[in-house]
Length: 447
Image (tube, helix red, strand yellow):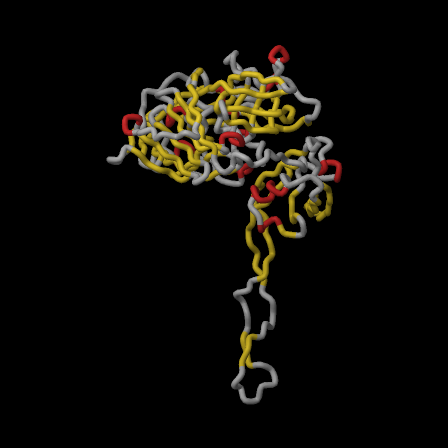
């Protein structure tokens, strides 16, 4: 579950859409507000209100405009107006997609409000990423919010703090590392260091909170940035204009000044998927959610600085999906369950005094309940699941002898990240027929 949502990196090509003159203002005397967020697949999902409608948005440093997905009834529900049609390109090899550029929308994030917000409503029924997350996702916001505040991201408490720059006071932090950010088309970059084949290589990386992987690197033989001997080809996520594929591997170290992470997951996307996003020639890759979540951050666009303070997740090992299965929530299915609230009562049989009574269930009552349906949407070639005989389109009924309706999508996917040799038993439905498969998780990077 820690990859597919590179789906979101998708919108990184909204580079040439210009600046908005609108501004967020915090409507309280403190000049600051805290917002609780959900952390799903290493991604920050925040509540956002647009024209009076409450929605869920991805907070993404990798985009420079606010986007809303048009699987909603955009014009009626949100009353979006003052529109013009544009076409956008992004990750993937498909055609440009249609969008509506809309002005003068009212957008609220906690106590922060912008009464003249530009939105880009994407017209593509396939750009609905909620099934891959197993949670609602209606759009993406990035630069428009970050430019107006000092933003603290506390991954430990899952709180986002927005503060007016003039009201923000930096506290002394001896354990922190602060770096200067450089901007290219409103997107933040920092210089870091990777260690590949015992060689330390300085790299310029996009800070990308909208990606769920750990690192992306762009291969460059002249710099020594290339694949190790151990890797596998995989689906990396959905781009704005198509699917993104590449290779997954690991690097020895990744360093942000004095903070060093070891045996870090890395993805090398296919060059054909990067044509419309790698316009910044100095860029060597991206730092995404699986690295960022290991720190609590202070992001200050106006002073071009970012502060890292490692948290309790810093030392967690980097895992990956060892099954080869990618799931999504594919509608609902009817599940037959016992209704324990139903029972007939009567005298205990044989009791003459009628002083002792008990409950006698004369018939078992069942009810049909709608539960999420999970289907396989990607299956890695030569993975344990594919070798066992599973196929794209299979619906999961149970895993390890427990019905899938007991689990969220994230809980099921997490089972595929366990240690190698873990036994997985799956019952699926294919063409209306239940079938059982057994396989063992494999870690190709294990020494």
